[in-house]
Image (cartoon, rainbow, N blue to C red; front, side, top):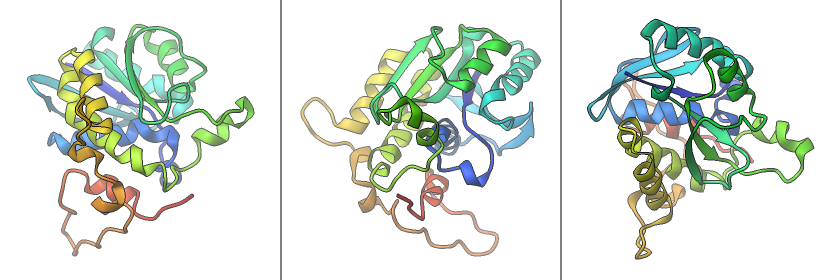
Length: 236
């Protein structure tokens, strides 16, 4: 079994923060690949399913970012998961917006979620670093990560999250190189310069419009309905 952990903070007030892009990516993965419903377990929310041939558990810790390792530790111990099968999706200020890098082990670069994970489960898990950009001043980092994505940033954030979800089976099969290549192509276009579906401007796909309210008892259709609903009302 592979354990995919998305890092973020619980609560509606944090749901659109840059710091929560790990949560957003896991939500998109679950919807795209037909995972089971989210339920409370391991001091977090979990969803089970498959990515390709791999059985996978998705985990969003509910312990707040700086205690993410507590939830991860419970899941790792319960299922006896090796660290090489633990994949953590998190925001990365030292990467330019829309860039993504995958690496095993290494430093935590001041990220409180990674600090907690390393403290509780060890350091040799896989990091999926999702670039959100640096504010340019170290004193502004805290406010930067805890602020909502702006309307302009949705032009790259939504295609990026979609691409991560679509290519997640490659990540689960330990093909990090092709996972990164596929995400880059989906966000930036292929070598010939042709744009993929994921590159269609967000405003043309309806992301910047408030989605229609579903009728009572009816869920919004489409694999990214939840993500679009999340970004329905823009903030600068």
